[in-house]
Length: 448
Image (cartoon, rainbow, N blue to C red):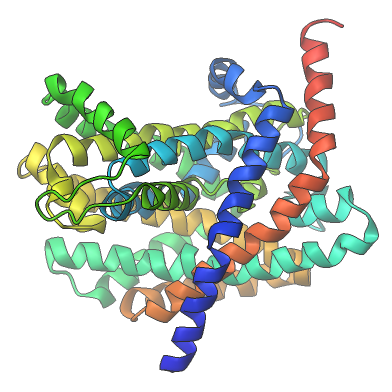
């Protein structure tokens, strides 16, 4: 067993090594430049479009707003709380700068994914709109690329049970146990029942719950972070100066912080940024394909806000709290570092914010990823697999909540990385389609 775990860890390090990270960041840069900075220039119009997208009578299963909330429900999670803290612990404050860079270019990646997802989506046997990388690979590329679509769906199905289910359930059980001393089996029962009540209703119910929970929890988390940040308002300029300086120079050892080289800041900033916003992994376009829209570009504009909200907003809030409170020099890492920072800046309340944030975000991740995995499984085996899949999904929740997940975590990490590779190939090959649809939309807007 130890030999198997060693092989998995080596495989994970290889898959998530410099080549994959360069590909993920490189595709984002290529699309950003190819789109002539469209994703940056259209951020404000996209926000207006998101607000208008709360209702829609166009073809699809869920509103554009619900599609983004479903995607965010699967994206916002441990990466925003524990992931940011780990990036700072391993790469220093400069890692946050590279997270920002990853997000800025990742907006184009997420935009391109959603554009293709809507352009090449299908209607399944039950009359639902389905799409994502497996469909834009199958319908957008030539027949000899279909094996790549199958690979994405296969890796996506397996990855969903790890990173989207068992790991999240374990995080919830651990957080509830640490704060309220509730046994894991009790948390497992409650979590399974609540998840079942939502998941059995399909994408419609998942989207409704996500559209309510995600904004409420995000606003509450950001509000608490802003309280801490503004209580250190005079130190904010120094915090930003530290981030920018550490991004290009070695960070010296301070207190419990052991120091970090510039390469560490780049490596862990990029890696954690991608882990947090999932741009390039191919998961979010599965949700956006179900949106009620007839414009791939407009849904792409809404989709790119997911990266903006996840990384440039929520991750930045976490990072500033950690830096302004001085917790980053404590030697703590992960959720423990974020908890220390919020407790320092918001005594007695801060720790509860982190725990409830982890619980709600992990719960919504379980809901969002259940849909992703279900669509991947349906692509492989047809609609007959939907109900067995949902039952198996619910059975995996208590297994994750009560289990030891070191091996599961590494397997999920490997599968997540393998999901990205077919998707990145498809984005590169189909980039002319993304550019063409965007240009046509721009010409229509300008009345040409």
